[in-house]
Length: 88
Image 1: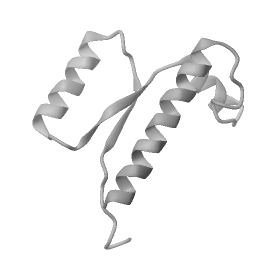
Image 2: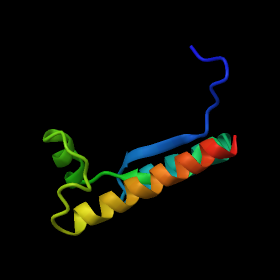
Image 3: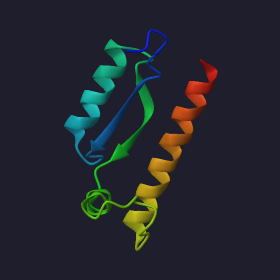
């Protein structure tokens, strides 16, 4: 345990961006717990599960648009998290 540990937010991942139900759930969470859920998310993509299956980061095997989009989402999320940590 770390008594100085602070939550910088929750990152929604494996989000089906085409599902109105999932988008509604994210809106509800943001309304019920303002500031807890990060403004960005990582969408469900076969490129991410494929990269996990071969134990490689998604940006290592950038073959196709899905890999490029997934790599961009993960990179953006990492930058956001690091920036949030440095603010605290």
